[in-house]
Length: 447
Ligand SMILES: [Zn+2]
Image 1 (spheres, rainbow, N blue to C red):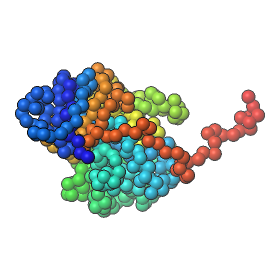
Image 2: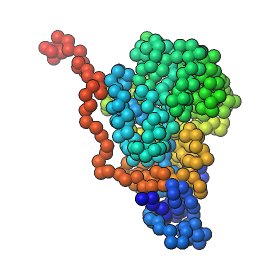
Image 3: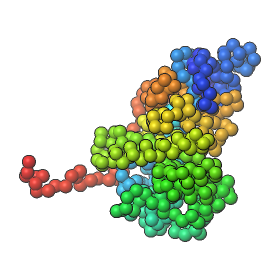
Image 4: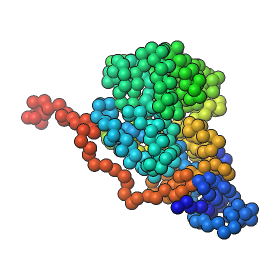
């Protein structure tokens, strides 16, 4: 049954960047925010109708804030450990069922909305529709279909085939194919078009621009003609400049951005989702999970170099957006969605309130729901959290599930099970290694 909720007595962070308001209340009816203010005001102004039943929630000593929006998350990857696994071991039916289970983790962690750029077998839009139709429980979703890659590939090197589709990737081999696939993805329900502007070539260091300017332009034109925005994975300086100049709306990563890239972003009104979390987790905790050694310094360096320019972008009014890249073994669902805010405070020097805005007001932009979502204002959709503690004092508490006391999604309290959702081993789901190490004669018989 639908419940009306009156949450009172908490410190309210509205998500607009305004300072927190102590002892504030919020009234929710039919999935919408009806009123904000003191309980007295709300009652005096008769915003709660005569005889209307509601459930009172005392939030004294706690924080009331918007549900968080993670603008870069791969909900179909199931905390994947390798590209082989992702490309060759994932049955479509199982991907859909496992993803439905993972959505519960994401919601429970306080993420009431997310943007998924690309999904295995392109299930993102169908999953969004399933959640919207109440087939399965989850956050609000905006989704791309598959990422568009040139034959050079993306981050998976030679695993990307010369043509066709694999995992989350669709290979495009000419300007015409770029246009064709952009239109097809929109027909399949994509809210965003995602292009992999940079990719890695085995034996070459870093990522390289693997699209021509004309191809980028073609994708943006075809998408924009159908009122669909474009995001691009850019982990190389020149790609940022070219993508921004040719109309890409959202730059993911923006690694190694230079002055020309920044200027192009400012001039063309593009936004940036740096997605430091994956790199930060590798740099800080990679050794704990046996990640390739030597990566720590490389990723720490990428964060530091990029952060300087992202800060400059922020100071120039560029919209900076929080995205965690959850869905990999280093960024499992439900654990690190708010780490990006922590990193923004650390390396960009944002205040906690400014950092929160990147996952509230700014996230509503990537959700294409700026007028409905992201901030606690009258008339907006009621997605909010009650947090035990004050994230303005310690932003990292937003990653602590024990502190996310109540999640309200679409105006209703999310019911938490006692157990964290998880699944047992699925036959064929993971790549089986012959061994973690090479069995040399010396290893067998030596010291
Ligand atoms: Zn990603």
